[in-house]
Image (cartoon, rainbow, N blue to C red; front, side, top):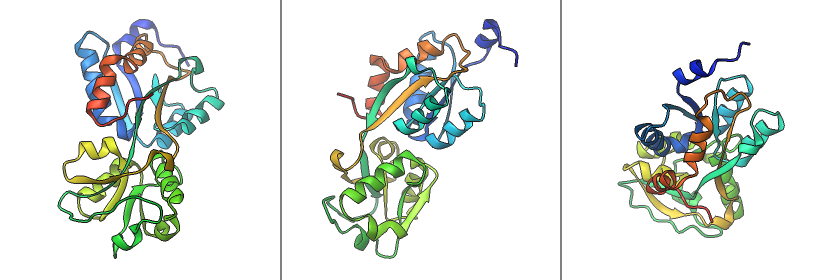
Length: 242
């Protein structure tokens, strides 16, 4: 395969694969970066698992931002990222949501009555078998001792944003999503916040791919961990890292 020239690389945008939960914030950050003189950045969003598999299959991507360390680790083990560029961009929290017009109340605590609150409905969440948001959700419910009661009543979504839509449309009485997802959707409300100790820390690692070609890809990654991008992330409901 011919290596693109610098001029050819500059004709196209910086190509970014990023977890679905980052869409609103990352689109705003990319637009601001371009408006301030940076190269165009094109973002594609899906579950981290889906994006990592596409990169493994040879997708021509400059930068990957995952919703957990596991999928970044898998790419690193295959030599598909540049490990020296890897950085953690931002954090997030996990929340229990309900439709905005719901009057349901629940306090998250060990053994809390989630199964009873579902009544005849389902719990919307990303698929725990592959999607980071789902894995965090299963870990939290397991730590709280309620996973066995609800495991058969999960509406498994392909990512956290799809789970968000299930609840927003009233198709599920409750859902588990990121705090940033709930922040982006007026048709849902946060019922309660999962204690951070019930699941692994939610962090978003980013790295240049092995085959990154755009000359501004590294600069865009630097921008993602800078103060301006951090302010955008926080404004969209993400959590600052210690």
